[in-house]
Length: 282
Image (cartoon, rainbow, N blue to C red):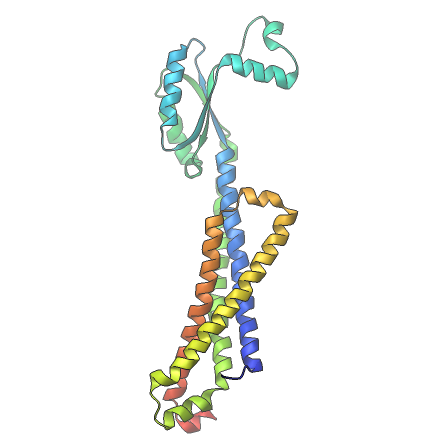
């Protein structure tokens, strides 16, 4: 069994830290994406129908809209239901006060998040207006426009940061592993000089690197889960926007990166020292 040296401990700590940072950024991006979907899904499109529309007509339209792939939910609200809801909010019987019902039957739509953007909503609006019973299509156009700009800008910034951090993680892990391998250069060269093959020499180092990467990734994952638990205990509303499958995928990615980069860097370092002359080791 190879003795664990301080260089191996420092290497494992360094790899764990950079993987932890990458994992936390990934978690932020996952929650940002979940929040994006949640906000987009909450934006409603009100399809207001003509006052003289017969029940069978708006019921048919409601059924048609429910079958559309771009619609997440379609809720039919008759003019009587709308008046009842308004009276509850204001605590005033508007029908009795005015002597008639001034509201219209409407269908409230929640679209799939991918369709909540200015271009798609314009197409949806044109599609809805093809029906001769549709009086008006209403949604918060300024909000949709501003939301799209903010989300696109934030997504671009996070993507750039993630790319830079991923490159930094690869570079830091590679250099950390190479520094830890520096202390083994004489052992590697000695094994070569007594006739050991390259594969035989590299095998124990590769196994050690894979285990080290696995341990480092495990430490990073435990730290990520710990910090996530603390954050969720204080802000449980994050549960509503977090995608559990994506988070599990992120943890798997951290595990794979830890093992693959450590293994690749170690294997490359072994072959580098095997190619050097004895005098170049000093």
